[in-house]
Length: 70
Ligand SMILES: [Zn+2]
Image (cartoon, rainbow, N blue to C red; front, side, top):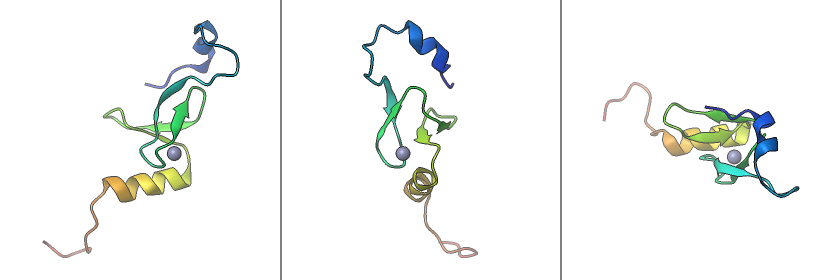
């Protein structure tokens, strides 16, 4: 579920302090409220970024040779 950034106005957080909602499974960096992300069914999140998407695929996927059974 993606949080509506408008709701953040109600959070009692100090001005200028980003509200970290999780960590990117691609680059490992913080995901702060209001950022564009891609969320997966099991709750994993990555930044909406080519680098993060690629890093996540390489990390989460299993390398194999196409057409070969191992
Ligand atoms: Zn990232």
